[in-house]
Image (cartoon, rainbow, N blue to C red; front, side, top):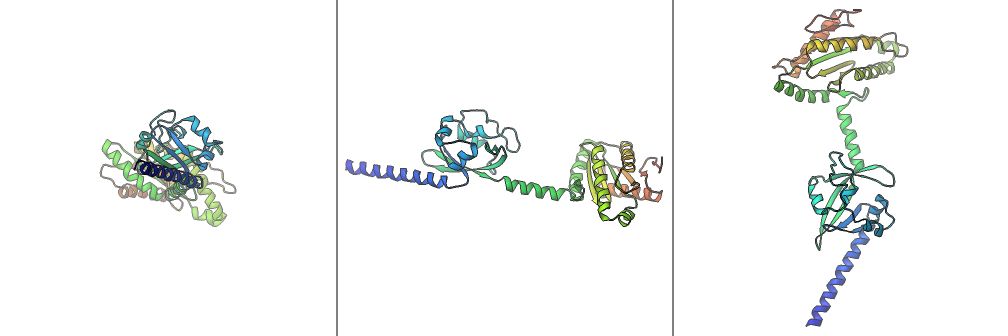
Length: 316
């Protein structure tokens, strides 16, 4: 009976060894970086893992005896890795610290020196071991980032679009209301823009809009939000800014636009409408006042600023 039991144990050991060998073969044929660990040791890493991290052999990697966290780039939210300088840490504890839904980390490819966004997949193995798979989602994240950019930015000028502005306004205005602060809008457009297109062509008109937008970007604060509202019309949201402060900025923008140098175009001017928020305002009511002010600027000869304060007239 003992001989039979011993034989059965030997068969089980052979089966386990065979399964481990099969697993390693499957791992080595996978393009995904994989590593088997227990709580404190690296047990095995596949070829894709070794190549990615620049190891010539499995032995060279195992000799390092480092927690996998030591290869993660530290402090890059949302890929936070607070333990990447610690050589000996419980692997399982570290994995548990990661966001369970995504488990995203940032790793540098030692060969190409390019950072990759990885998602860690964890599979349970016998004998308190785990199989960690590092799935490269860099391209997916890049595509998602590009898509988000297109959803929030104007394709021609590169500044924010109307959709983004409207979404951000609701948050910014609500914060201003809670804190008892004032925010202001500056609405402006290019005077006689149809004439620019008709005289110089639409490509030149596009260049006017792009050049103007870049000039404005260089003159506003980081806290200000600048967007293309539509066509040749632009809008600025200025947090913690009253109408007088908004008027000062509008004067700077008006003068800067008048002084723009654009090939073949004599001069570009803009008209401005200003409005500051009231506690009861919505985007619609605040925008309506700025829009009416812009209309008055057009009625008053263009190339000027209108709001609830004295206006800056043409050639002033």
